[in-house]
Image 1: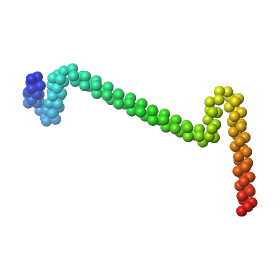
Image 2: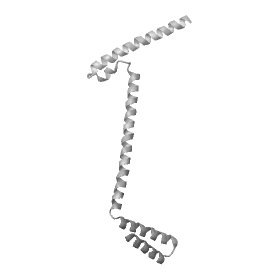
Image 3: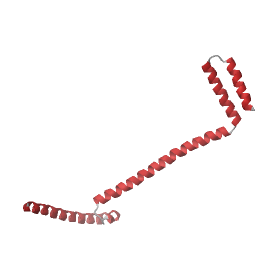
Image 4: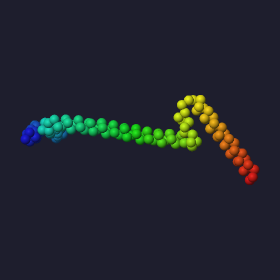
Length: 130
């Protein structure tokens, strides 16, 4: 009932306002006020819920983005570890003391040097055969 009275008031105000643009502004304002007054406190609850949904959506997007980045970095880290450490030497990452880690890395370096010498020698041998 109040809404019908508010619309009648809007039409009455629009009779006294000159210019179509000003009349449209007054009509829009009066209708908005009529809807807010008719709806009561539910309008404010709807505005708060809309704000909460916006914040929740942004928060969930950031959480999903950070989880995806973390998974990407874990995958890239395991790939780099596989490139830098030979297979089976992952235990080097978990050695507690620096001295033990240094001895193990020197052993790996020695093995790599021996393999490099064998590869270079075999390449020279293959060149001599051809």
